[in-house]
Image (cartoon, rainbow, N blue to C red; front, side, top):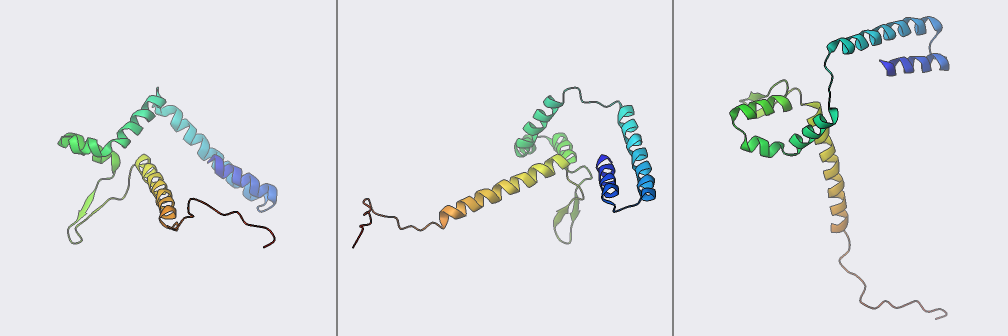
Amino acid sequence: MKKKIEQLEEKFILGDIDRSLYDKFNMKYRTELSQIEKEIENSGETLSNSEKFINNSVEVCSRINKIWCSGDYAQKVKLQKTVFPEGVMYDREKDEYRTSKVNSVIELISKQARVLESHKKRKDDFFVNLPLLVAGSRIELPTLGL
């Protein structure tokens, strides 16, 4: 909402919208922002030790395969619900698993891993494509005037 308000102000300053539109949407956005802030304040759910939570989450994500393999049924169900909050569906005709949503943290980690993998692959491709011929142990200096 804050971003929308900033964009609205910018449009007004640049003359893209007139005063009446600015006032209308400014009031709407500020009311929504106020409601969101009240909901956050009233939720009562605060994270007392966010650094510990983040470190624990990173640890779990980095060992997710081992946790899955070594876990019992209850642990696997809990892990699956964490990674796929809306569940996993199976399509018998196509023999495929589907999910409509992935945990946002897992999704970000997955995207970052793909980016890193593509960078690594490009670097590996660079070295693979280097010519195999190299100069001998002695390189002659160019002579002038010949």
